[in-house]
Image (tube, rainbow, N blue to C red):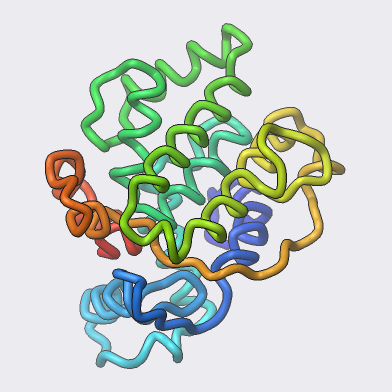
Amino acid sequence: MALGVRHNFDQIMDWLAVYEGGYVNHPRDPGGATNRGVTQRVYDAYRRNKGRPLQSVRHISDGEHDEIYLRQYWQPIRGDDLPDGLDATMFDFAVNSGVSRAARTLQRSLGVTADGIIGEITLSAVYERVNRGALIDLIVDVNNRRMSFLRRLSTFDVFGKGWTRRVVGDQPGVQAGDIGVVDRSVYLARDDMANASIPRPKRAAQGKADERSMRRSGRLADALGGLWGALFGGRRAGAT
């Protein structure tokens, strides 16, 4: 991958690939056509910015895919600056629901202003938790808040099983051998890769857990709070 990217990025990308498989275009997914986790809308914007002709996201190259993930999700959530484990939680959240949504959820967990941008104040609050020995609690809380958000979405009846398995795994809580984002993140934070490198789960229908779904549910007030920050930070989370 790109120079300067921490070793965690490749491992986390491998985990993410379990859930962000090949080409899908589910009629209930507000993100629309998606390939390997990149929506057509994101891919179109990327190609325009590169001065390249538009094409179906079916044809996205490995290089394009990796650059989009790095620049649109990993870097905005400050993946290189977050502690081990929290980087995995935040990256997966951002890819699935948008950078702004993920950032605001973290900020609410930390008790700092939820502006959707991970800056120095947010990072300082994160490392204050680390210094207190509360990193694991922070990871678990962010994932719990993520699940609360997902359950409120109008498409939870369609994609909820897949989203729940993705975030929580097969069992609530954190345990060795489970396949949730929270499980893998906690074991990465503990530097226990034997339990973090978990067999791939069975596929389940998934869509982007995005803020357009919330608007369709009539929860406009909550959704609008993150819309501006998601304009180039979401994937099916406005899928920008």
